[in-house]
Image (cartoon, rainbow, N blue to C red; front, side, top):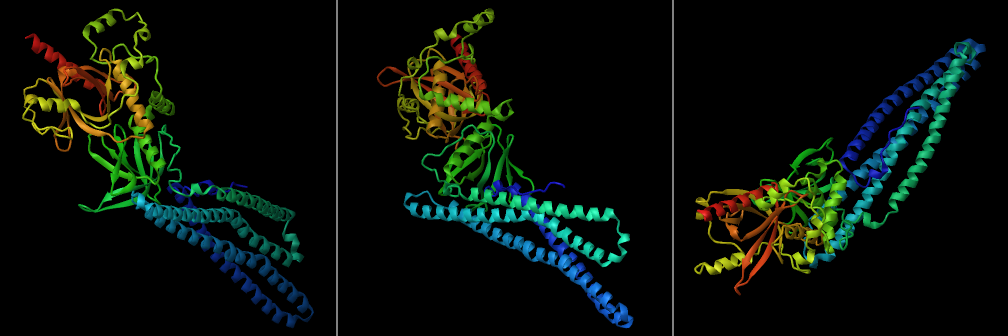
Length: 598
């Protein structure tokens, strides 16, 4: 006997478009079965009606035959009664009981789904104000009740559809068997027309029906137990954002799927939010509306950036920005856990981790590297001897001449405390004392408290021999104790990334970094106003990360009003490789050296 396709009860709560698509196949099959059952019943009722007419005709005929009156009348009456009991009655019961039950559960499931969508829309519009905690609690309970109701109705509906796959086989075969048995009994005197092979065939069919009945009872009991297990879960399964205090967040995801609210602009100042099913596929973000067979491409995630944003007083919103710096789409998750997991997953995908042989292991390694910064380390492990063009030519020549000799690098590496003082605060916004200091020494220029300069044109850039622009995002800055080695940049990278991971800081300030032969400028991409300016001669160290090629940092020597100098390290994430930025800075320093020599 062929296997029976079934709906998975485990997928009832998630209610994904794939499950809805499979459900539509079962619903279409139930509709086709209903039409066929009605047609079959009409045909059987016509046969039964014809047999009744045969009884009346035989009764009239038997009156003329005298001796055969009793035999013919009883024979046809028994045949009509047997057809009514074994052929017509089972198909009527199947239509009135099983098919009607499936139709009723379908309507209940539709109503429960509609109520859940309305409650989720109401929950998504909740503001972030603390004084609305009572309203948030009430709406959360309403969402949980609607989700539980939908879960219960879907489980009952799925169980009914699964049971229908068994019952329809019996419902189609039982009338045929009843009709065959009635005809055999009717033509008992002509039994020689039916061979023993036919008897064995009918016997095997009866055994098959019996086995299906046994299988149906076992499957019904199994589904009943599974339904009780699924309904016995904790209420937190139905309540959105139930663990808002301390959610268990998986930061190593390289793929993610679930429902999100998509922000759509409908006018100059009007927007709408649409709840859709999103999932990642390789380096793409896909969207699949409910009822659609397949998903469509929404956003290419390679080299993009993602950050949490405030949008229309809604909670748990994040924005995906394209590699060229243009603002992309804005999405809203239903909980803090979903929000941060989506941000982590998109961030991992944007690094193209999914292209490696073991993407899960690479994601775990990168996140562990960041989290290990909470404790001091005694060695920086393996680092390349020449990380970027910031190393002087003399050292590179020595390495080329002795490329077969492996130096003992770990013996000369300084301790973490020698590079950065323990407990040094980290600045995550662009607030640069160096800019204020330079503005104060210019005399006539007013200090801008937001760290921006007022000049929008850069006359020195017009005469510069070097002009290169890079798109970067500011990760953080901190004071350091030395600039004698690039290891101080690696340690600052480690501590900044760790602090962002521990404190769930995803927001980054995007700027255009212009490298000229005189200075480094951070420019606002929207207003083209200079946010910060560093003289290239004050840059004492610069390097790119060895594993994450998009991380780059540099050390700035800043003069203080007391006559002393302070050292600060600035860490950025670039859309391109950090080595290109290091090469541009090194080229600018070489131009300055040549100009001084002349």
